[in-house]
Image (cartoon, rainbow, N blue to C red):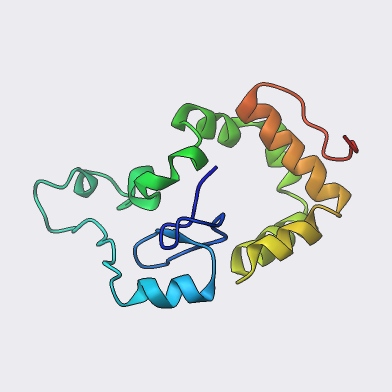
Length: 144
């Protein structure tokens, strides 16, 4: 389990948008923001930057801070998600797409996710994703 990068006492709920460290509260954020060192995106004009050879300027490593390694899904598993016909079928549903957009846009993602997990369609979608990524079946409807 990760701890807050500022106080090292609580479980972090938030991530600094500038430097991606995890923190647990407004107090910790205020403490952190004065010393924050934003992560710079890769320069598109840097000839040594391997991202310039790609149409996508960001890599997975650019998007995830090294402290987030417990949250990383290996690239081969992510590619399986993209290749899944079952997930493609789910994503044709406009209600699910709107739900995913609302989660992505929410400031308090934890609250919105909790509400989304009450939606049977979202639970099915989540189960499908986890089944692909972890090579096993999940059922969030079970009360264990």
